[in-house]
Amino acid sequence: MTELGAVESFNALPAERLAAELLACCAAPAWGAAVAAGRPFADRDGILAAADAAGRGLTWPEVLEGLSAHPRIGERAAGDSQEAAWSRAEQSAAAQSADDTTKAELIAANRAYEERFGHVFLIFASGRSQAEILAAARERLGNDEAAERPIVTDELRRIARLRLERVLDAL
Image (cartoon, rainbow, N blue to C red):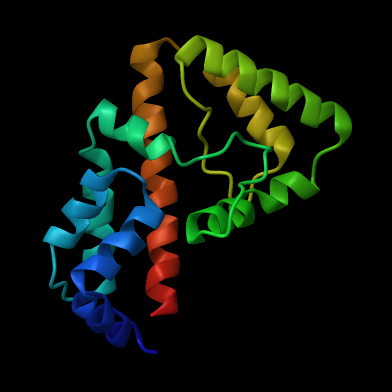
C-alpha cells in the first residue's frame, strides 16, 4: 500500500481498533488518546509528529503506565500480544550478541537500576548490542531522579514511535 493509502487507512480505523493499536505501541492511554485526537492526518509525517509530541507531553505517572508493559532488558517478553512480539524483535539483536558474562552483568545492572529508580530500565534497544545496553545502564545508574526521568520519557517516546511506524507499515 502507498504511504497515502496507509494514512487514509489509519485515519479510517474504527476508534476501538485504533485505541488497541496505539495501546500496543505505548501502554500509556494518554499517549494513544493524544495521537488519535489528531485525526485526520494529512500524511505519515503528521502522524509521527503527533506521536512524538504525545510522547514528550506525558506526565511522569503516564510514563510509568507506559513502562508497565516493558519487560526487563534481556528478558523475553511473554505472551502472544503484538506488544510482546515487538518487544522480542526489538531486543533480538541484543540477545544474539551477548555472552554469558555480559548477560549476567546486565541482569545485575537491571536489578541495581530498579532498586535505585523503582522501575525497569528502559532503552531503545533496536540495533544495539547487549554490551552497548549494559554500558548505557551503568552510565544511567549515575543519574539522579531528575536527570533520569527525561531520558526514560524520551526512550519510551522513541519505542512508541518505532512501533507506530510498524502499525503504519502494516496498513
